Length: 232
Ligand SMILES: *[C@@H]1O[C@H](CO)[C@@H](O)[C@H](O)[C@H]1NC(C)=O
Ligand SMILES: *[C@@H]1O[C@H](CO)[C@@H](O)[C@H](O)[C@H]1NC(C)=O
Image (tube, rainbow, N blue to C red):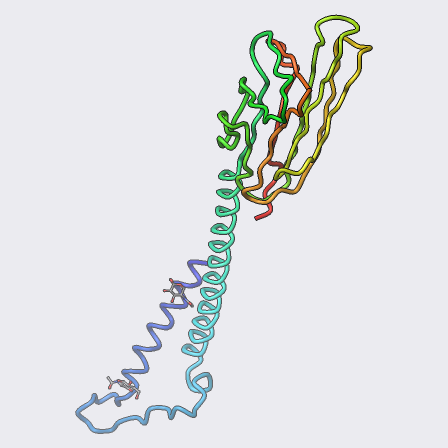
């Protein structure tokens, strides 16, 4: 390909030199016998086949260069778009997973509803779960997977058990776990759901009044949220 292009340019050069010389007769410019240059209307291909080939080759090369430039432009555009999507995905990583406590301990019962502040942190990628107020704030709009598991131990068979908690999205109940009885000493329940959240939406777990949860280093009580994918 390079060789052909070079050859074409050589022919071009030779023909253009020739056309300049062609303005004069063999006697030289001083003789005054000028050869009329071709009029612009005249087809160059009819008078000079060499320059015609060169011309066609030049046109082809120009078209190829245009095509190359266009393809390169499109590739650069796609690359920029892909990079932006990738950066967006990287920036939107958000996942948290927490447990009630590390030691044997029971939370509640209280006389009013209380937000549960989970003390043990498995993961808080993106830092969107607030360890001081127990509230997760969605960093961006998207589909989130949320999971809540509760467990309680009444201490002895026949004692009243109240293993209950409510997961709230923007102060509205999204999952209600409730196990009140006196038959079991221990009880556990779980809710898992995928929800569409908007950026800034809050998710928290409330311990309703009268309920109590017990935990140990076994992490029976967990609260987990993961951004599956963002939609903004
Ligand atoms: C020969 O003619 C062409 C076209 O008229 C012109 O562009 C070129 O400058 C001329 N060459 C010389 C050496 O006069
Ligand atoms: C192709 O791109 C180069 C660099 O931007 C530019 O100099 C050249 O004129 C372009 N060629 C065509 C045929 O558009």
